[in-house]
Image 1 (cartoon, rainbow over the protein chains, first blue to last red):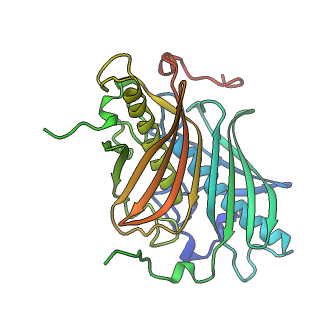
Image 2 (tube, rainbow over the protein chains, first blue to last red; image 1 turned 60 degrees about the horizontal axis):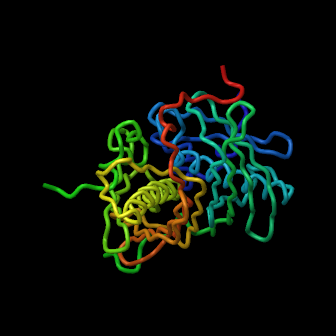
Length: 164
Length: 164
């Protein structure tokens, strides 16, 4: 039996994210795991995921950092609470802010490895730093402020102030 | 004859970006225009571009901000140099850093409008602030530090320090 990823524990009603929802068959469906105190996601970009030809699209890199980091935030909060990820209530995090520094171009030449670490847990907020590696080289650094989703978030009908 | 977008002026060898390359048929192919001193991109997310069901995927929002802002940077540099966008040498910008504040969830309920403005032009660097609207409501604020691409960037074969 293969190891369960953080995303395998997301409740079904919040498992449709384009980046990390296991139920979104059009999306990236990233899978994240603990590696000691760090978290790891491996992702193989598609040939279309290009920026300048030969390099990985920066929007994909930002997307992977985002979802890797919210997954890390959830897993870290379970750990901080001394709970298994299959225990209730389920925890799911959304992104308050995302910062990405593109340190150097990322070659579109194989698997990317994202490694995350928790910088801070405070109340419902978790700050995660995520580095993107290709081989042993760090090409991108990301930081995400993730906030625990209100329990009713996925149940409220979407609206905006001026939409019919 | 329809108006040309900023991205229509990108040279062919740098027009394959997943977010803004007119030659990337799998990508978003955003199109950006001047509106006075602001720049505007309109984009209709697909049903799959979901975060929590009913809301737009944050990675897509980051991606749109990124490409809208690099397009804005290029257009602004032409303006600062008093040049038309079809004049030589062609200008193309890459992202040094991207910051996104998700102010509120963005409903997956129609067209998004991105509006950018230049905060600073200094040497080869342009800082752009981009807001994402749905209707009259701003849901996301982004800031991009864009840097003019070296002339030979797209011509150099990709590599990394430890890839064969």
